[in-house]
Length: 125
Image 1: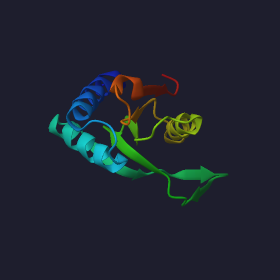
Image 2: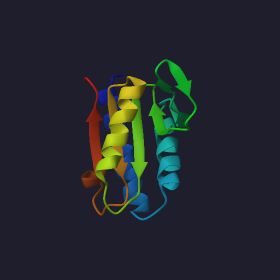
Image 3: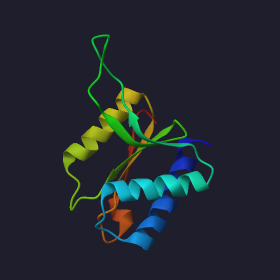
């Protein structure tokens, strides 16, 4: 399954979750629900994955964590904020570059219409 196929399934699950729960909950709630739904589809999902950071060939232990990593191919960053800030996009792009992955979804569940809160970010795709 390629990144686009995986993202299609993720977006479907995210829409179902938002329809059931609505906006306004903690990010951890949406993360747990999305992980559960994706695993029910048979996808391999890891949560709170430590992000290695190497600076000048020295591995640094700085505690960056990906919210969800699906099939070791796609990053999901989950937010529940009034408005996404530029730094949320920048952080997600940086995670893509550091991980050398191609696609990430930045999902803000704190929106009236979830499609307005879903953003695809790419790295050499």
